[in-house]
Structure formats: C-alpha cells, structure tokens
Length: 117
Length: 112
Image (cartoon, rainbow over all chains, first blue to last red; front, side):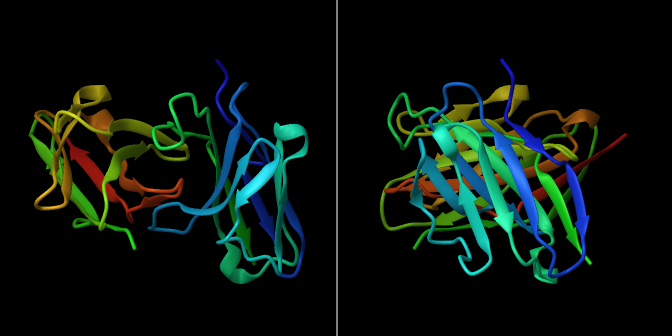
C-alpha cells in the first residue's frame, strides 16, 4: 500500500512569493490533515478535511493561507504571499475513520520543507 | 485546554541501555494518548496508542508506554535501545473533538 505522498520535498522561495504544496493521501482515506512543524517543535494542525469539506480550519491564517481538496482526494495548500516566519515543514496526514473519529490512526507523509529567504 | 509537555528535549543513551522518554499532559476529561516517531527527513509514524483498557500499551520496535491517570503521564520505555532508534519522539493527546495536540518532541540519540 502506497503511503501519503507529498511534493515538492523541498522549496526555497523569496518572501512575498507564492508557494503551493500538494498531497495525495492513502487510497480510501476520507480524512486529510495539513500540519505545520516549526523547527524544534511538534506538528500543529492547520486544517482538517472530511472528504471535500474543511471541518476544522480554525488555525489556518486565512489572510495568506488557503487550501482545497477537490473531489475529496488530493489536496493543495497555498501560501500567498509567503513571509519569513512561514519557514517550516508542512506535513500532510490522512486517516480512515473506520472505528470512529477518536480512534483513527493518522498516517503522515514525509513533508515539504519550506525555506523563505 | 489540553496541553502536552515532554520533559526532556534531548536524551543521549548508550546502545543496549534502557531508556524512558517522559510525557505529561493536562486535560480535564478523558483522553486518548499517542507516541509517534520521526526519523530524519521522514513523516511521523505511530509507535503506540492508549485508548482504554490496560494501562500498559505495547507498540512497535519493542517500545511500550504506561498510562498513569493520577499523574497524567504517558511515559515511553524501551528496555534495550539500538542505534536505529535514534530519532525524534513525539507524545500526543486527543480529547473530545478531533484535534490532536503534539508535544515539542524528544530527540533520542543512541551512542555506540
């Protein structure tokens, strides 16, 4: 079974430029998460999708961040314009809530390391 | 509000020695607890989780953790570590809703 796929793995941009990250979850997983992991810290949730609906985006900085999950499969996270403080690893995870939402296991992709200069 | 504290940012240990990575959480309700491992340049991988039942949980790679409700702790242990266990370990808690809160991580460094 293929894992969660993310691209690109690394991205270096100058501040004020736009950037986009792509995630392909595990086949059959209806829940998709985007996390941001700052250096030396644990992941912090940005947005969670149930199929194509964003059910928790309370931590997404909506002035510059946007996300979409068309057809409830792949997802794209965009930052426009990027700021120096956006440098981090952006992780995508997916899960299949077969046993209920509290017991689902999240499977993480390798992440995209963003550096904003 | 829930929070997770990993008491040690780094833990150096010699190969074949036992190790304990400490995790404390704060929550006013029942919680579900997790330990994840992150190898360099990789995503997080679930080691083990506590949902209910026995307070001693066994996971992959020989790791185990014990849930202590009175001390609000979920410490991770391994009786004998290998070089390949060198990685970042994250404790996480989920309560009520669907959001999982992660600790800041503990870097385990196994020396030969």
